[in-house]
Image (cartoon, helix red, strand yellow):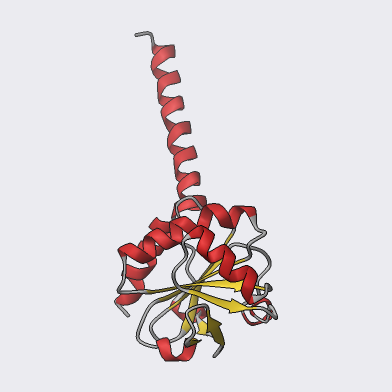
Length: 173
């Protein structure tokens, strides 16, 4: 192999490694707030589709994932099955899907069609202000002390990896 081909191979390998690193940082690596930057989650209460009320403050001691979505959101249709899969595989954490800004009937029909199990509703879209939501889907990660530790906005094909890493890391607190 000529010296030119060896150098070209080396530069190609470096370029591939750099692209993989950037992709990892953007898609896979969880984006956490540091311990010092964590802030208290609001003491929200939601009605559930199952009937019993859901109070975030009563979840202290557990890692909680809140997945905010709306039925009209196309990326949510891809994200929610991934979140639901993680929830089934990890019963030790609390995963709650929050339908924002839609009437109960719309939320219930969408949840049935998507096979969602732990859905709460926010028909007045108060979560937008409480959690500073700019779009859907948005995942908010709350540590066992009731503090917001991460917010992930947008469709992330690696959301299950992020959730697993967050659950493992935050459960150690």
